[in-house]
Length: 77
Image 1: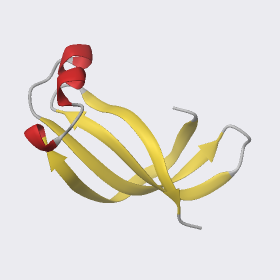
Image 2: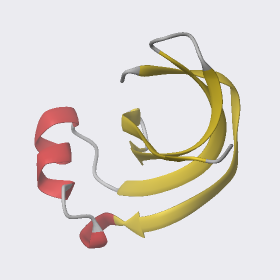
Image 3: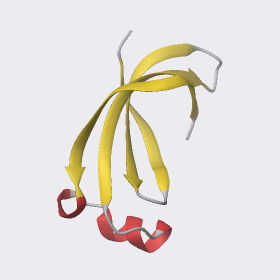
Image 4: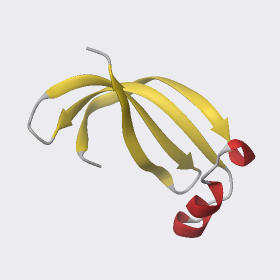
C-alpha cells in the first residue's frame, strides 16, 4: 500500500463473493483462506506526501486472513 488509513472505514459494502472474484485463485494460493470477498468503503487516507484525503477504498478479505490488497479507487474530496 502506498497510503495509510486514518481512522475507521465506513459505508462498507460487498462487491463480489468467492467465484465472482477474478483473482480468487491467486488470493487462495498466496494467502490461503477459502471464502474470499471483495469489499469497498470510505475512509480518510494519508498519502506518501503527507496529504490526508477522503477516498473510496477497495480490498479483498477472507475469514482468518484479514484485509489484503487494499487500493484507492477514487478520491471523494
